[in-house]
Image (cartoon, rainbow, N blue to C red; front, side, top):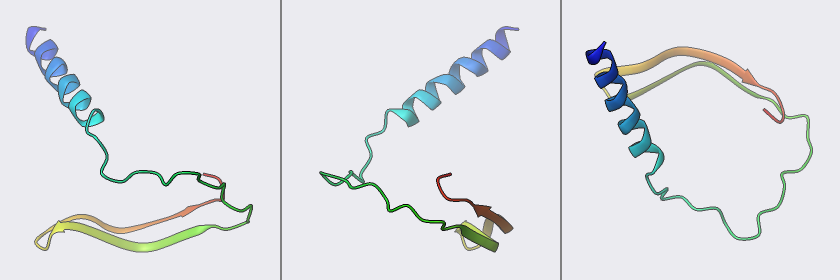
Length: 68
């Protein structure tokens, strides 16, 4: 039980550290709402990796509807 609690406490601290990181990208002043459209984003067989040898995602496909 103590080991589980310790791991959870360490995990919580790490999550808190990540959430408190200051973002480098800032919103522009006076943002305007996006125009209303029926747009959809479709991605098919997308891959992503941090280092050329270690692939994080492979053949990911999904669609995102407007407003999601």
